[in-house]
Length: 349
Image (cartoon, rainbow, N blue to C red; front, side, top):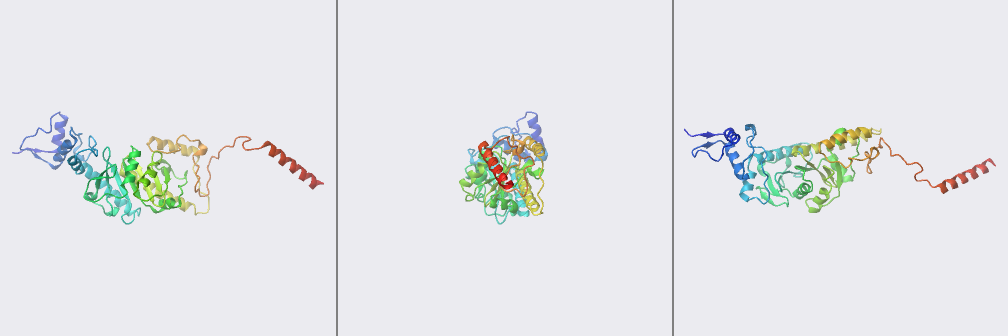
């Protein structure tokens, strides 16, 4: 009777220090066991032991790069690990489409999967109806390495973010209406209003350039060291995450809900209330502990809520203190006093 080798059998062999390549010639491998051995061959080294529940979809031990052979890249592109990430991209694409964050074939998504390679969405396909086989593999210069469909035309922006920000694991670009409204107006959303926004998002605006060009990507990438959500003037929004693609998508939900809430609050006929500076400091401490960037770390309390753009009837809860005598001219003060006294004498004549 022929031996049937499962993934669990191979895992046990690894734990016991046995060579998993030393199998009986007549052994029959289960599909997950074959994927396990294929991953080992692609890596050129012993793969990490995963639980059987993972079925080979755990992260590879060693990342590939654009310099890896074509056969290695093709094998990697078809591993359960990449298949799982492709399914995640499809899921996020459907959520973007269902929430009307994208229209037509707009929006794009990318996930870093190696030293200088990334999975990405195809061009001219609605984000709501993508399939795993639609995805592509590209290097960080935008060259397509794998995939039947042409990669998104805006991939350069995603790749420039990843090159500039090594912590960027995934990026999402879309056109949520309320957030994009702020981008079209060239106005950063005001701060100090809602905790979730303060903790999870840090927003800046990049000037407009033609979508898909290196110039557009550079203007966005220049901001990602201190911001994880970028409003793209007259275009849309892009976010990045140091965790995963779902987390990058969450940034979009948080920003869009915030922009919508601020616009509603501004129409209620009363000045929106803001949190105090100490309360905001508490939130920034949480944010910093989560590894999320924000340019306000280390600022004084009176600087935290400053916003030079649009603030719907609110002012900082802690106004800046004016130094004693600052901005006063003694000679001018004396002249004003003398003129005032002279006018009073004439009136009392």
